Length: 283
Figure 1 (cartoon, rainbow, N blue to C red):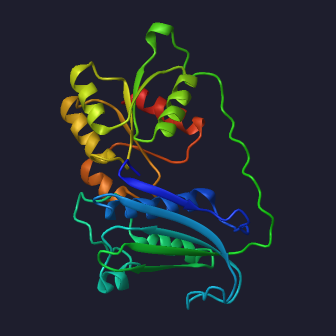
Figure 2: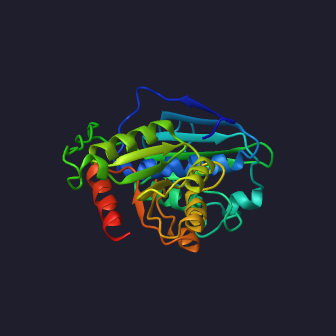
Figure 3: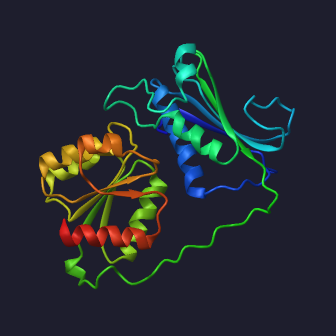
């Protein structure tokens, strides 16, 4: 979320299970968090809270059937929205953001995700007082299960000599994600180097020979991954770039900037290997 935003977690340890796809749920949470970050123009606080919601305590949204639900609340202390904007916030294709501004998706997609599961989303906001979005997901009677562990293969993408390992530039503002991608690339027999910001990446590209490939996160401070790819291509037009994103659908804006291929988060090392090999082969 960046150094100017305080992240507060209020997580109930006795949550009921819900039946959902982990990747879709992660995308919903990430999109809400990124929308909140866009609203926190001068910093502030983002709170993510979870809890169980029984039929009448607290009162459920009017469009929910009586029952048991898991409630997710994401609140920010940002600019907030007028009643007119709140009334349209879940409408498809509605946005208040200018072209090239902001990084989150429309709230309609998050609302649609919750409705598909038999739940709903609701929103409250006032100008200057921040925004709160609630997701209500129906309780599942089945016990929670852990996903199967992903299989990481140890062989490189393609056998390479020590002095012939393609250099891969990793650009991501999250230190843990950077470290994870670097570890995967080492596993694949490549030579990764990582930076934590778009400006650091541009500085490196300006003073060094270009790498064989760049892996670029979509949502970052300073500029998003789309803009970074465009500016990287100003320096090195033939640099192969892979846009790494956790968003459900960024293609509408992405192709306004670049035709770079996209790798969706979360991904396995197998998927990363396939994407990297394709780009190294064909550029």
